Length: 247
Image (cartoon, rainbow, N blue to C red; front, top):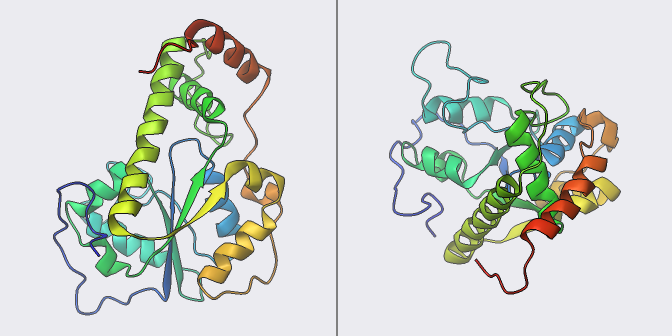
C-alpha cells in the first residue's frame, strides 16, 4: 500500500534512527471551507487528540524553523512535538500539502498507519461562497482580521471556488480508492449540530476514552455565514445556473 505518494512524486527522506513514532496519528483531510479547522480546534480542545493544524503547508510563516531551513523534515518534527501526552499525533492535510511533503520525506514512515478523518459539506455551493469570500477578503476565519477589503459579489469567483472544491474532493476520492484506505467521514453540518459523537468516534479510532467534551465555543471560531451568503446564493443561481450546462 503506497500512501506516500499523490501522483507520480515519491518521498525521499526516511525517519532517522532515533525517531520516536507517535502511538497513533490522526490525519484530517477535506477541501477548503469544509469544516476542517472547526474539527481540528475541537480535537485540540479535548487535550487527548493531539493539536492538529496545517503543519505541512509549504511556505507557511506560522511554523518557521528557528535553527535552519524550513523543510518538511522540520515540519514532521514539529507535528510530532504537538502530540498530546497520550502519544496521539494529529495534523490537517490538503492534497497539495501531501504532495509537497511527499517530495521530500516518506511521510507515512514518520507517521505509520494513519487514521484518516475526511470532512465534507453537503452544501457545496455554500462552501464555494465561503471560499470565494475568504479569497476576496483574505479573512479565512473569525480569528483573522483579513485585508479590510469589502466582499464584492462575483459569480466568476464563486464558480472557480466551486470547481476547486470539487477537484479537491476528487483528488481525495482517487487517493483513498487507489490505496484502498478507509476514512472516517464527517459532515460539517453534523459537527455544528452535535459534535460530541464525532469526537468520541475519532477517539475510538485510536483507542482513547475522552475525559470530557469541549463546547463548540471552545473551538474559538464563529460561524461566518450571514445574510450576504444567502443573497450571493440567490444571485449566483440566477446568474450561473443552467440545466443545459455541464462544464
